[in-house]
Image (tube, rainbow, N blue to C red; front, side):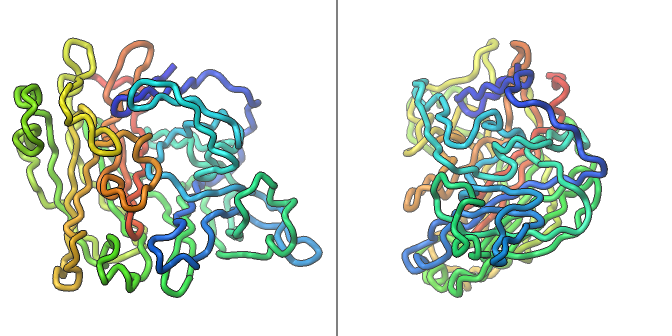
Length: 423
């Protein structure tokens, strides 16, 4: 049994228990993961953009009227992705529409009814998934046949009606149509997104992941950024909501708790956190383009267990630092990124520099809350604590921060998941 401890909540993932039969692996497979990055609306000026509920189809079959009705791969009920995505599909053992039990910030059991929505493909689809590659857990990527394929995203209503039973008129509403040549053994991330909000234009972004071919140190965390925003909306230039410019400069600080001051109840900012020596406001990188398919990863130290535990108990602090408006900042060391516009005169509104604290509770911040400042500025922690056989260890992760208009999505991939770190 593996228990994932993410900033105070327990996500119990039972790897040995399956209620669906194992499928045979594909020969010469490629591996694909699909997200829907289209939001309900970024602001009131764009309420006419495409509804964000989609069906993803690979190699669609067309009915007599020329509308897709099924395909080689169908990812139905594809809702806007969550802000935080693990490499392990947390709800893969559950069917669409099934109530899920979850522990909230106050250790209460709560029931969540997701309805007919899948936040990614494969997500909770029961399909063969990728094996571990280069030490990374890739069970959130589906096996698909390699070769050249057609991919479409179709707008559909958010109901419990399967795509194949929708009317021909609805199934004709193809939003994105593209082809891609998938290479055997390679890993791909595909995302449906808006390329121009003002003019209602959409497209598919595809990244052939290189981390399966790169060397990573086992005692480090890694983080990388990519700007997937489309053309800057006019309303963003007027300062109505955050938007990331074409050229951004990123700095980072690695914070650890000041145990003495955390027990005094002093005000926030008065030495509750100290920068880790050598990691205070360091330059990381400059992003000079949007829709880049290559990511430069920043290496950060994987701290030993003493930063997370006191005599085998997880660190906890009684003061208000645990609470940050709509969720917890957590009790662990965290990384803060500061994002600046390289041309500060072109983006003079109040949202830049954009400060991103990788410290939050993933459940609290997994759904975007318009107008809530904490949603803008937090992601879950980059450190991943895993309970394997009663022994809690801190695991290294690779973290891809995807900047899309007014939000940052974190895709966290567990490294060295099949071994216990030496800590």
